[in-house]
Image 1 (cartoon, rainbow, N blue to C red):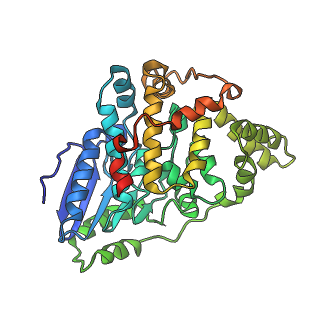
Image 2: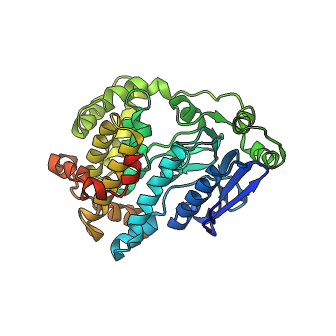
Image 3: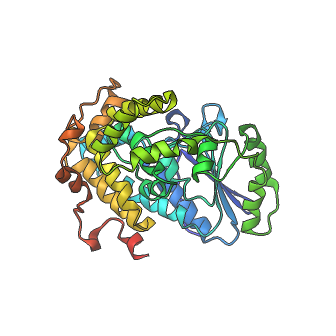
Length: 376
């Protein structure tokens, strides 16, 4: 077995036949750094090759200790600072993070994600490929990237585009947060376990002798509580009616019309969604709609390769402070004025050429950073 990459924010141990990983960056809600990505990749690859490791279980932590939150995504302050300083680690982060996402989706052993608390962005990237995705009544799942002028990456195009109807467009464009019941109903989680049961489960994982990899996953799955009731699919007809529209402009027009509905619940929903989208980057709304629709026809590897092109363009098409993403992070997490100056400022001013540029690769196929995935 190769030497494992060490990170102060990732604890990884093998106990019995199970590899146990704890994300330990609670002050940042376990937001992923390049060191954390490298540590996760190193441990997972080593354990995949180790016949003595049957399965992997991953959890997060909060200020009170284990569990509480899973992972809030990538370190957006790092994105901002690295983009402004020209730090090459920014490119390395996305290339290596996407490779990690692919590894998890294609992992050859059970990989079980205990998705308590916040599970957003990159947190979805290291959990959606799990063979068993466990949520709790405290779970908060989202792909909120449009709020910072980014797009739902880490394979978001792949897994969101495969949700029922046009739920994927809705979640991708709005960044709407869903709980355990809705996540299970939409196929973004497999089962729910009470948060209070997780510490005992974790200790029993350390003590239980397992005979096969499949036995580990079955053992965790039987701990599940009854599936909570979800009402999200009752909104499906509204969501489909709006987010099946061919363009962002038409989506907004349909929401405006629906907000005048005689049905108070329908009108309130439409008005709320219209308000959400009105605060997002007009340019990135167009880019994200195109992303999700392209991704429906792509394999996971092809989707991640497309997203690697897109994230490059987010930071380099208009470099430095001119980047929509840098401006979005500035407004949310740096200056915290919550007043991003989007460019263009209006949905009507976004042109097809502006959108198309995000999908134009700066690399030849053989030099693409994800060439290893495309060849696999």
